[in-house]
View 1 (spheres, helix red, strand yellow):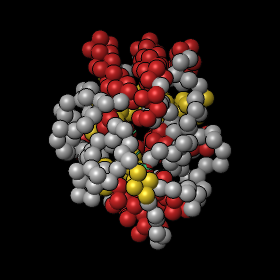
View 2: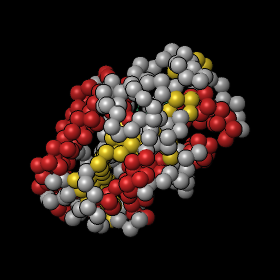
View 3: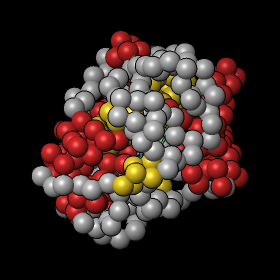
Amino acid sequence: MKNILVTGGAGYIGSHVAKKLAEAGFNVIVLDNLSKGHREAVLKGKLIVGDLADVDLLDRIMKEEGIEGVIHLAADSLVGESMEKPGKYYRNNVANGINLLEAMVNNGVEYIVFSSTAAVYGEPEEIPITESHPANPENTYGESKLFFEKILKRYDEIYNLRYVSLRYFNAAGADLSGQIGEAHDPETHLIPIVLEKALGVREKLYIFGADYPTKDGTCIRDYIHVEDLADAHILAIEALAAGLESRIYNLGNGEGYSVREVIEAAEEVTGKKIEAEIAGRRAGDPAVLVASSEKIKKELGWKPLYPDLKTIIESAWRWHKGGGFDGND
Ligand code: UFG
């Protein structure tokens, strides 16, 4: 297997995946509509600017590029927005995703790695969360990803389309080369927001809730370095090509850090005092989300190389200090 289509490959996680794939010797074709992605984030391989709604384009890409496997990250991924505009999430993350699967089936493409999320679990019943934990998403974003996992299961049964679904916990950090990193607009994620505050480009940093039943009252999350996350995609597509049956895997470090701990670690990394104000809880935030990633470690030999929170924040800091990307695309 050589020719891989990466949908959403100009986005934060997708650009890291595309870079690693190219470094591993694959021929990478990125499809991205640049609604959130950045042209400069595609460091290697070919960028096709287009949308999953374009059925003819998908068919043409499969044929003309000789696609043999797909890594599908193109999606809307803002939890808050998904509760205001559910139709957008069902359309882009579910319906348009089906266009991709149909194009794959029509062109004999057999393998797909899907970008899923911890948001499929909803409020956890136990920590750490394993893949067998019930999936009860509390927001449209998580539900759209769960729907797509179910569709994948059906396509496997009916067409023998094999998939690995990777349920990401909190992706963070930036490529160690400093060339690509997290650049969302608007930014909603904790680590970039904390670093923007440290840089002085953001006026206020709010802690969303200090009354959770956790050690310091703030929410606990499992932060995973985006490079470690990217590695898992390559292991997954290679394993599928080598005969792996369809699977779902969690991806996290198995270690939880509170919002306050993240801010303290960022203070150490940046050497700056980072002031934060307590604000109300953000709707839909579970108190604690920590993954068990034992399954992918055992089955695919995945091993996070940068599990340490400070290393994760250091890489993000290098990127943010460098100024990020210039334009919006
Ligand atoms: N937080 C703050 N202040 C901020 C931003 C975030 O206190 O300015 C807190 C949040 O309330 C949360 C924690 O920091 O407790 C982490 O928040 P993020 O927005 O960085 O990440 P989430 O855990 O909300 O979201 C991540 C992914 C989503 C995915 C979700 C699954 O980014 O795509 O996990 O629960 F859906």
